[in-house]
Amino acid sequence: MGRRTGRTALARWVCAAALVVALGACEVPPPEGPYPLRYRDMTFSVQTTPDLQYGQAPGPGGTPQKLLLDVYAPAGDTAAKRPAVIWMHGGSFKYGSRKDSMTVELAQRFARRGYVAVSISYRLLAEEACGGSASTERCMPAALAAADDERAAVRYLRSRAAELRIDPDRIAIGGISAGGVASVLAGATADTPGTSGNPGPSSAARAVVSISGGLPTNLVFTAGDPPTLFWHGMEDTVVPFEWAHSNARYMMQNGLIGVLRYVEGAGHVPGAQFDDMDAQARNFLYKMLSLAGAVTE
Image (cartoon, rainbow, N blue to C red):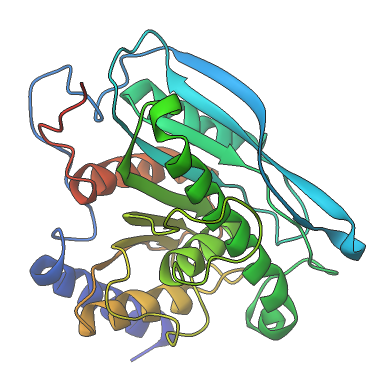
């Protein structure tokens, strides 16, 4: 069996297992219901509130760094308790910002569906750009710091749920590339809050979306970790496909919900597949946040 054939078979095995444990095949089905369906269909315009400080932590060189986020909310919406999703940009833990076009587009699309969507900046502490299996050890401190920052953002939203009209029990996290790596890590380590800000509220996310992300180890996963969707190109070598495959399989074998949406022939964060990334995240979060018939008043 060739390398590509073997990887395809393994990926399909994960998808088959997901049929029993989670949602179905690799392609997470869309919510059913007539148009317009809140949280599925993009019916709102977007109101943006930029540059809110959600925390502070030592940045490069130890200098205190303000941690900022932008809020994207459905304009004109009167609902009192909306689900929230935090998005983290990519950039190898060295580059990028919350203004990244793909991250902003995700946030805006989810706001148009009725979510309160947030794009966060986080500390970029890698001395060199991270990528590939060889960078795992030297990049771990940067990944841990980014996860600390994301958990601080979860606590920020939870502590301001009434002000932002967020349902504190329906907060999801997700990210692209390095942001996906950090999101999987933050979801699996909610009981390690870190010191990036907002002590007190729970750091736990209800669901995680990892786009071209994943972890090189399964040792961080424990009982009670949130359901996680891994969207991954099978030819990705920046964040190796094998990481996401191993994470999803381990989660399912240990009573957790891990769904692997794989795309044959695709590499790292393929822009041509953006609509599929968005749709799979939408479908997964609709199910995992129990949004069918959710009370919003």
